[in-house]
Amino acid sequence: MRFRSVASPANIALIVLGAVSVFFYVNALQIEGQGAGAIPWFIRLTLIQGLLYIASALIAWKARGSNSTLFITIAFAALFRLSLLFAPPLLSDDIYRYIWDGRVQASGINPYRYIPADDRLQNLRDTEIYPRINRREYAPTIYPPGAEAIFFLTTRISQSVTWMKATMVGFEALTMWALMALLVSFGLPRQRVLIYAWHPLAIWEFAGSGHLDAIAIAFIMLALLAGRRDAKPAAGLFLAGATLVKLYPALLFPALYRRWDWKLPAAFIITTTLAYAPYLGVGAHQALGYLPGYMREEGITSGDRFFLLAAARRILNWQSMPEAIFLAFAAVLLLGLGVWFLRGREPDGRGLVIRGLVLCSAFTVLLSPRYSWYFTWLIPFLCFTPAISGYYLTTAAFILYGLWVNERLVFDLNLALYVPFLILSVLDFWLRERNSSGLAAASAQVPQKGTVDETT
Image (cartoon, rainbow, N blue to C red):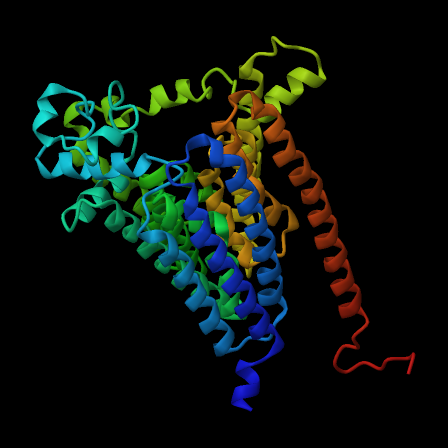
């Protein structure tokens, strides 16, 4: 019986899909040193990986819960990451700034004070990390204090790329633990953690490139778990931890907050204040680092990077539509969602994570990031809902690497990314409403205790 359970059709299918995926991860490393010319090949490869992943996720979603399926899930999740962990980052050089910031702090210098090229940091330069730092000639660090603290602690063990990537994978392990605890609390099988653990976007961006979004996601999941357990101070602390890494997770506050609760916001404010305090010697404005410059550079302050604004300008033929109109629309939409959640009934069941997914998705579409790793924070929420739109958006996000080849493709790539997503979102809503109506009708047909069903 035990052998039949291990050798179930679902497990065999997952083993086959996992083995094929490992082959693709290992062979994808051939793009090293080939530059932007290999990007079209890489995009095609990752889209194939996305199809393998969706097939695996569907199996994990429908299969009966079993320890053997969970073991296969975790084993292949580890293999996928190990296949990329020891290779140099192929798609981003952000990790070199992480290591540099940790080195600067270890020398007793505030990382917000100087740009890497400043002569006062000359004694910290080397031939391995410093030459690969992006924007080293003009930009101080952009990362918030929570990220800086982790950079410092990691580099006290080793200032290697592999070790920094291992830190991100370690936070992924924390994410998976929190996801499994949440799944159990909702009465769902733990094997659905596969929906995060096997996602090629998470694997490439964290084990492959070492992006710090892995830290923010781990804190977000811990905050949701604490919220589920009604541990309000812990939820506020973990939400602050996520915000102190990437800032925008603060948008999840309405998903976690319960009316008249003062503990969560108090924990959030105190944690954030204490984290910024050691870095304020450079002044509050300078402690923002390169964030204002980054917003200008990425077209956020001008509105050039927003897909919905660009689409409106083309459709309405109003090229001079001011970005202030779009920013006001985005603010009103996010504020409206937040107020709706705050005024709604107390979070119950999976409503907690559904609210989080709605807020994260709305913000991501409004921001329309140019980098695929900005979509990774949506992935954990998919473990709790069969949102077709979410699967599409996160697996198709790899096409944004096409901007490495041609920046002028930005509108076309966004069109291919967001239009299907919006259509699929409508389909998700319709399916959700139909299923809810079906369940309500079925419940109404069940005779109540103490009554007689006259149709029998």
